[in-house]
Image (cartoon, rainbow, N blue to C red; front, side, top):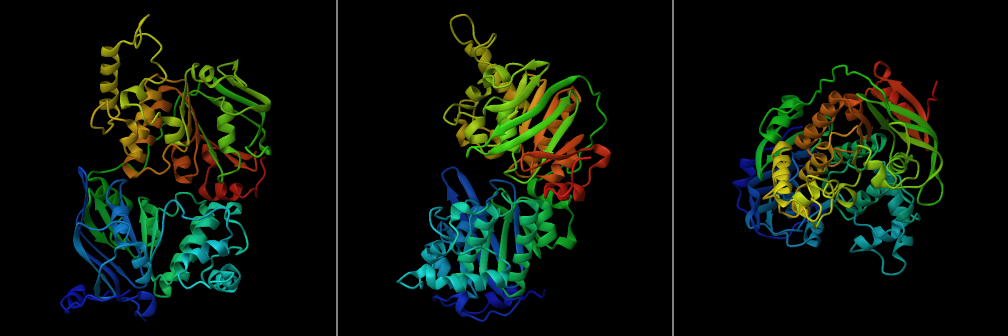
Length: 531
């Protein structure tokens, strides 16, 4: 794709006037959006520090960086959610002021947020009608059905206009958000971490849609921290670190290790050595487990397996196939209808969570904020949540404050938790540092069994590297690890055996020498039965 010289564009006299991308015939390769010298400062934080960014017609442009690098802030400015403290924005070569999302939409800029902005109790057509300024005043959703179907077919965004949003999968909801933007006239489309909640097949379909849109002259900004996505689907990659642009490159100019180093400022381990470990006794045994989901339907249907010390047992599967219910039943958070759970030979079926964890079980929950921490408590208080009742943390009458603080400082240093102090509320920390607090608390007790549910979900490359290294350290120490993840690369890198769940059952269990990415993907669709 030929990119025009920005110098020739910027040297032309600029007139401040309203202009809409949706009303212009923009030739492929022309600059749709130019951001110059953008500065945004929040109390105590420089989120964007003199940032330049360009988006061209016909390209998919990755905006890559760690959590907190300033990616989303920059795009929120472009979409009118924030106002820049300094800097200028040009749309199709004209200087504009974007004071609100309404302005952005008028200029042909759309945004699909990481957390969707849909009303679950309304239909697809009703949600889209609410987003369109020119929707018919009388029964707008009825008049839009044909238009929705036309756009759906054109871009491969299949969705039922009459379906209620609450009935849709996550991938289908994302399609609705994209349709909203396209039908609103978007020629520049921003997607914020769009694949975080998608299955592999949904992700592949999304990428096909983005390429189709780019081929028709749209410009796509893909905010992500996933290296493989940036390299596989994007035409250019802009890397941000600490609020600044480090570089803008093409995928054929770099490899994943280069991008990781740009993001973090140091070499990052992307390939993990997993030397053979000494396999010991059975630590966790699950026999014929049957568990109901929140709707009263069977979510886990006769699952059996065991995990021995020194091994990682991975569970793969598309979200909603019973993985979460299985984990909750093991740790005592969900009732077991039938079957048995044993830890170190002790029956803990339907026992309180406190008793299960008291047997030397570490639990890294899927939802770290809701179940992994007490958000309003301090970092040090979260670090002792499981142990504060016991010596030496507490004496017969009161807590041993000096010991607790020394313990907290040591764990913060050992696990490299970035925090203003051990007394800071843990909710103020980034997602990666909250996960470090949870891991520090759980692993410092030298657990015999670790149950890790989506431990790197939503984390950037540096935090992901850290969590995976810690899990392998615990495997080497002799812990038994149950790893539930939708990241297939993660499962392949860390697991000694992988089970694939489909509709509440294990489709099969693969040994290390049998594991391939293609085979797991086939099994995730329920197309291969266990031998």
